[in-house]
Image 1 (spheres, rainbow, N blue to C red):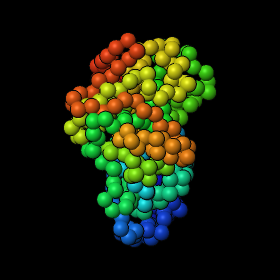
Image 2: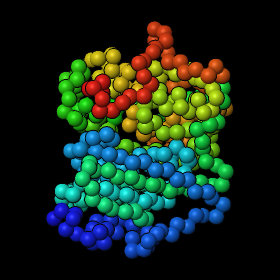
Image 3: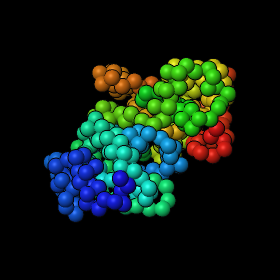
Length: 334
């Protein structure tokens, strides 16, 4: 059954009303009613993703739903915010099948339940172009405690969560492209990298620690080096990053062992959805210990400086790359 055979009301009632939280009023009203806790402020973020640009058109619909919400919840996490809910705008190609919608809603619902971020409203339309969806997510922080990009100071430790580069390496594998390094990976490593591309893991458990300890933070969406440059620029500072300190998965290490030039893809490829933050040196021990308690790996990768430049150091000296942020789906992305 294609979506055009359902009224908009029936489509929402069947696939999306089950995902709604109380603020969504059963998705039967024209607006949601959000309650903000006393002494808190509202944090909002929005991301649109388009088939063929931000995900592969034949990606499993469960992972498309997951990723659409994940990229927004990742932004909330980096601000130190607790998720409150989200709005969904879904522009569907006219030929979309009911099975696709069911799987999409399943992936979206699983992500919403995991991150305690219920659907509160939105809109659905059909269109002749590619699948396009936009999510606006809402979160809350104690008044005056949102962690901004601006705030890094010379002497701060530059740190990142999780591992970097997995999603950028997973993209060509998901697209079925041959690379100089794909043969070096086991089947389980290939599956791991593809999953990291399709299903981000927002570090929402770190929100409270960021509020308590970070001087600045943002999530890594466009590439570690490019996003570091953005954070440093708005803070009016520079930094030195030690490339060998950037945390890597075993799969990424195997890629670099087989094809060292892939370091550029790892550091600039994007879609990591990890948190990049700056921590005053005197707060690092408490921050790192708290992250361990939450089961989230954090690694220091450099120091903030006052020079206003971003320097990347390798074991043999300074490194330079053609670009700091990678462009997906260009010829170079293969």
